[in-house]
Length: 175
Ligand code: ATP
Ligand code: MG
Image (tube, rainbow, N blue to C red; front, top):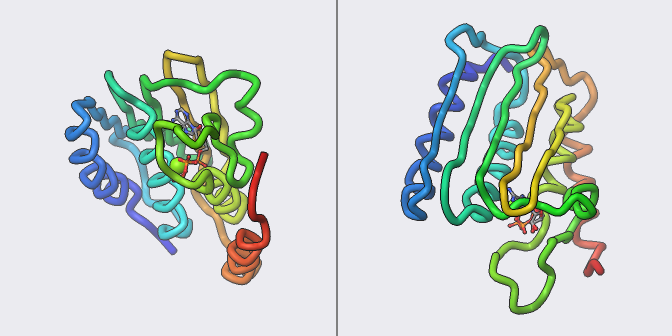
C-alpha cells in the first residue's frame, strides 16, 4: 500500500512525545522535506518503529531521543537514536534473539519480556528492511532502518507472520 511516510512518522512522534516528556527526555524529530510516499506495509512498519522508540524511552534516563528520516537512493533511512544506557559490544549480536534481555536478573530495573526486537527483526525481514544497531555503553544507541521505497510483497506475508507468532509460544525460557 502507498503510504505518506511523513504523516505516519509525525503521528508516531506525537504518540511518543508525551512518554518522553514524562521522563524529562527531549524528543527531537528530523524529517527531510523531500521525503516521498513509499510502498510498504504501514501496520508492520509502525510496529517496528514503536518497538524501537519504546526501547529508546525505556533505556534512557536523561538526555535526548532522536527520530531521523532521510532519503537514501531507493531507500528511506530511519534512525532511532538515544542517549541511554547503551549495550555492551558482546551483547549486540544477542539482543534480536527472543526473550534476550541484557539484564536478566529477577531484580532488574527495566520491564518487558524481551520480544520487541525479535518481533521487529522478523517484521523487517517481511518488509525487506535492513536493520542495524550501533551502541556504546553509558553513551547511547542508534538503530538504523533501511526501508525500500517500493516493496511489493508477493509472498504471503500474513501467513509467515502467523508462524512467527505461533513459534513464540513454543519457547519458554532463555539463558
Ligand atoms: P519487550 O520489548 O518485550 O517489552 P525488552 O524491551 O526488554 O522487552 P527487546 O525490545 O527485545 O526487549 O530488547 C532486548 C534487550 O536489548 C533489552 O532488554 C535491553 O537489554 C536491550 N536494548 C534494546 N534496546 C535498547 C536501547 N535502546 N538501549 C539499551 N538497551 C537496549
Ligand atoms: Mg522492547
